Image (tube, rainbow, N blue to C red; front, side, top):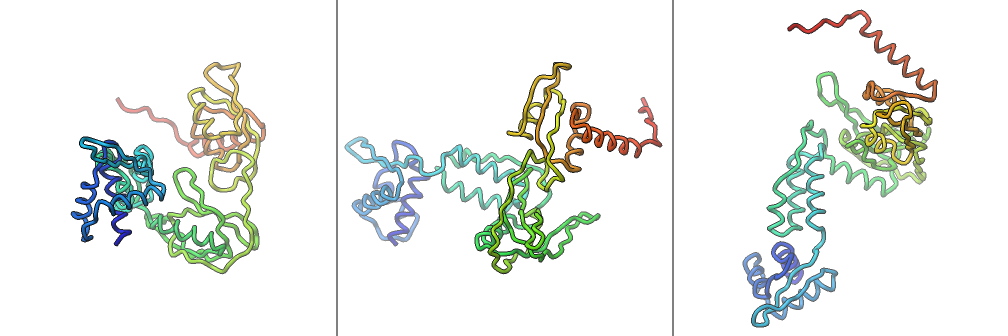
Length: 329
């Protein structure tokens, strides 16, 4: 009963007394009486509860009003409004949570705000998405527990068929989960095969029926990447490449290559910059270059430039038997 009363007081201060002038002891007593079945608490009891909250680390300030009436308010009761705003927006745009999961989570964060701030949280950032194939939060909880217990993992993994339906198949290999990674707006589980030592990657939103396996004492160490990664999957190799890109792409390039990037002005073209970076090379690298079209050119090394030219020839050959028909007026 005592604990329930203290929780009610903290809830009241969070919602209605997050800034001066605050609330009085009488206000707190009325709130407890209206929102619980607790017996009437005396002013002395309320003051003692406020002292306990202060001892627990809550910054409760007191000020004096008219007729020497004491007012209490809670300073920075936890998250700031901007922090909660950011978290709520992040939940809103998460493409792997159902609408019901979003509402449930956002409602919990609203409980950390004053009533005035809750009204400021009404607007939501929205995103167009495919409905999630599994309970992401449940999957993450189960995976983190298995990692903490140093166990192997079993699960079913889903992939889309030609009809757009998810087909699941069992993944019960001798694999150990190593870490959860957020990459390109998706959550992935990085695993390692015990026998071969090969690295395996799975999208967590496509997993279901996750169960722990036997305890595995093998210490999993994932190597630091030697360069920028354009994909969550392991590249075939890491190479240092030199690119000429349009200056308008400079921000994208620095975000992509991060600490591995070296940039300079292009002396041959003031509208371009030259970027040198260590990067993982796989088919994904060539697809990535291709999407920028004429705004990007591979300058070096020559073998990677030649490999890209061969891919362009193969692409052109697919359309070699066709001619462009002018659009009708």
